Amino acid sequence: MALINKSYLDNVEEVKKVLERDGIVILKDFFEKKYYEKLKEEVLNLNFSEDKKPLMHSYLKGGFELPMKVRDYFENLIDDKLKKVSAFRLVWKDYTLMHDSAKRDRKFEIVIDLTDDWNQDAGGQVCYDSKDVVIPVTGNSVTIVKGDVVRYVKYVNNLSKGKERLLIICSS
Image 1: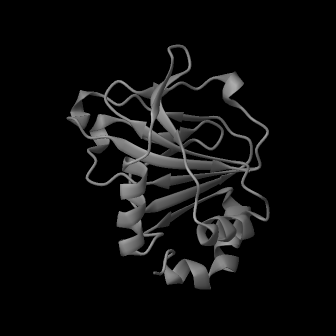
Image 2: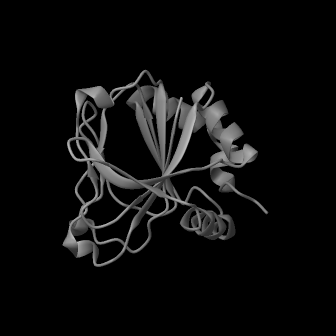
Image 3: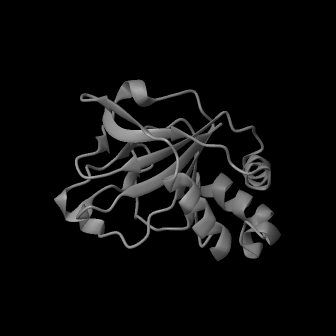
């Protein structure tokens, strides 16, 4: 089964150029459809634990291992090893706050969005402080951000109507 959209496999150098020039790249329809559905199912079936620090964040978090082909693609793209990979499940009242202690010594961050059919007014968007970027909720997309920037997730409000945000976040 093919995992990554062939157009991204065939254009690694172009993606690298955009990332180097802009410091951020958003790749839509990143995974092949069948694998995307399988990946979402895997993440939904993880054992998540509640991680709540009221002055920092509130969400459900679980460990996750990317398939080697996906990991290799990302590591080739950023010319570095991924050090940390975690899955996140965000529901009504979940958030992360922008906080200086959230800065880490990382070269890149990769956000894999597995959220479909989301009302943008429900919050839950991933944001980066120094890039002035708000990433819209888009299923089957990958956002790669260069640099040690502070990420936060906007408060998930009652307009989420029982739906949840699913993310895999990797960093180097």
